Image (cartoon, helix red, strand yellow):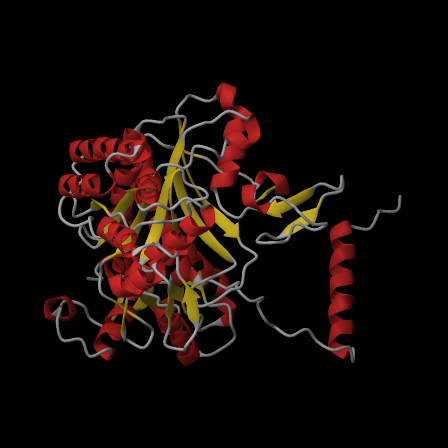
Length: 512
């Protein structure tokens, strides 16, 4: 009976033939390049991000939030502000058409998928629904320094509670999560405002049109960069910048502009004092008073959770996207001194944010469903920690490398690596064809803690030689401290084969 050809063998043959054709063809070769806004991330970057996610997930679960993972693709009409208004909905998102001619898009954030999930499963969920999520998101926007089209986000949200205490809990959890990720207490602060206060301010300042309101809010959002004098010009007739370009202002009266500036300046000192100053500026408007009451409840809850004003403060200058948020808004700012790639001081700014959005689920159900949440970019937080001298991947090391000095003994080298792995130690056998010196260079580039050397003499004597590469790197860098640590560690040692695991473990675990 004839045997049918193996599909795998056929594919392998086709691949080999294709490879030969590619090598002999005169056709132009593709250029090895990455699309703009998409970056390759190696082990160090991934190690830092995984440490952040593991630490933050532990905090979120301790608060009683459950993990949720939603698909990378959503139907385009589920992404809110990116509703298709053309034949191809590609404004802001990466979209494609399914075989049933429905448009799907890669998720822009993790909140729109949450709203869709909550609406789809509302009857079966324990309410309020508390979830956290992390994953890759994609944005079809112009890339720039620190601005990517693909990055990892981490969110935590409560859906189904209108209580200000739900906002306070999200804020407290954000503070705890950032600290668990590697930011010491006091190195970041969550600044809190409320959209209702801003609406009350607009009423007090005599702002009635949506267009004028937007100009005022944009001016307030530039306070950190332009200072009070620059914002005062933007609130009035306008401002000419250093290049000579003129930006038309909001057209407020001088008294109204000063009221807005007094509002932004109210956020100093403790939270209770800030509330009192805000009441003097906007008290009397129904919406403003409602916002003040909500902030007072958040203040009381934060105090009960042990979160002081040094970690979460009221700041009326926080604006964020007001078309999206309906109540409290918050933004986490890094306070640590940071430096750029050239070692120059820089202001890193925001590392996360969130707020209350009570209208998102209603897009699917028609019923207003209260929700609040916080989100941060994992890649951005890792970059912030690194810029502040707290690189989470700085101590990451590669595997122990077993050098190959006798090609006829490959099975023995494999057995050595297997023994180390069985003991919980990362190990690999060098599978190139180079000699000993290039193998040692390879192990050093892998940031290996140790190299295992077994040649003919070691095989005959039943021993192994170990090279302490951590110690070698320490000595090569000219570090003068940790003298006792170095004195107790010979750079190279030969031990009986039976003591291999114990000796390697001592090297791996003794890095200071």
